[in-house]
Length: 243
Image (cartoon, rainbow, N blue to C red; front, side):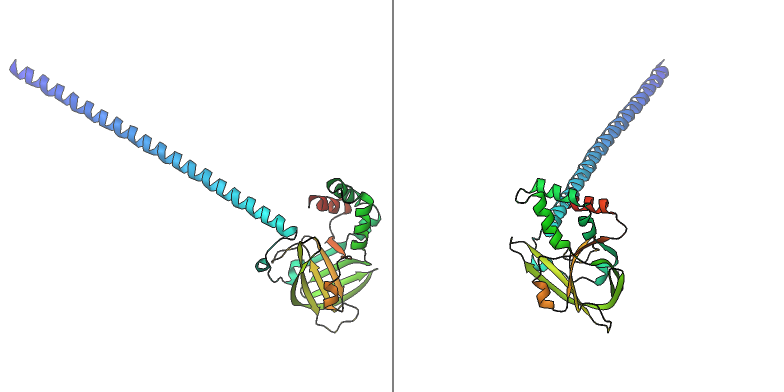
């Protein structure tokens, strides 16, 4: 009888040990789950912070680019640019002004700015866009001007940039290239202005050309404008409205 009681006592004690071990495992599992839960929350919070941080920087970058496009920047932000920034086949937008394709652009401008009527905006851009050079092709160091189908090709070398201040207080940068070959029929200087102030591929540009570098810098009323030749007039108009 005594042996039986001892055996029962040992069996009960074994169950107690198993129970304690089970409780310990359960507590450890619960603690582990809590730790994992906290870690997941912390990771999720960090991801949200990183996303917000990236979005904030993107927003700041967009705002900065908009300011630069509108002509507000610091001198130290301006950097030299290679001719390859303007490489490609480009068409003048002047024919699209003449045939009325760009009328929607001037209507949009008049609706956003009451200082000028539709007719006044169109007249302003008529003077600005006017040119007989309907196409420009830029490849390597060479620029080819197509004037009524006649091609004139010249080799050009970078000649620095100039920062200009306009009457409204905003500013622009002219990136200048000098003719260095012995080709005939091309201007001694060309100057690009495209609202970009550091190396970056241009999407469109205004261009000035002539034989007097300083005189060109004073030209602010006629700025022939060029977009990629693969675009049609309506695509160009929508690009203009978007900017």
